[in-house]
Image (cartoon, rainbow, N blue to C red; front, side, top):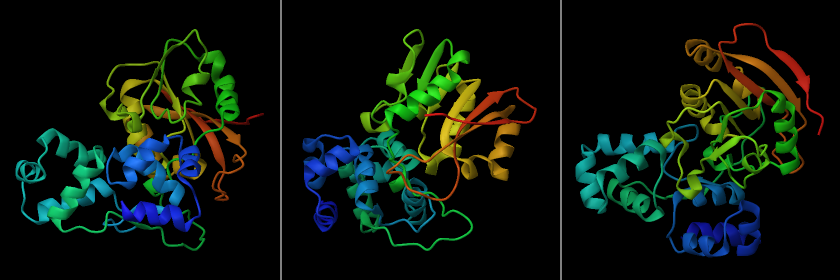
Length: 290
């Protein structure tokens, strides 16, 4: 993929540099630069190289934009799948979650007249309100010591089955106490959180911030206790609070955390937020000692 290769070289990064920064293998990166491989690893690389989906206006959902273009062209899912050469379920996954292969997406974009696949992220100015999250910025790996401290803070209440829905490099999942029944999802490894429907006791991770609402809504369907590592502003908007109330959840605790070195410094408070089913009172505020 020419754009990927050009962006890496423009930043003076070797394939090894990018692989270490994203946690993917060099062979996986090489495949992506040839236009092969999965979209999960591609999203990880986009965040490091400052790329975004080329056919999507800023602030819009990429999968929804793809489906919208198909509908605007008057093409059914069955017809587009036939022209791509894939199954209808494969196309549905692409339109719902942008899950699938680079080759399938490239063919869909070609048929729908949407180009390019990738483009550079334009610089944006700072304002009083944080810019809407972009999926290309989602891949920020949690330092293991931070995950361990968050887990330790909530350890007295942890029991039963616990799920890390966005494992990444495993900082949370690998740090869960051994007595727990531990499970994980990771879209980059073909285990999509939105395909998980088994009840668990806890859900805990650093979720993709651009999909925080989707992750929260799904987590509330399967678990009574949820812990997200995320900016306070993303968790306490009127819309997010309405979602919690509508599903019988409340914020039980907000644990303030210093933003790790190497993470984007937005100026907004990072927290570990404990969302609990049935909690209707005020939330407590504490500070994490790492």
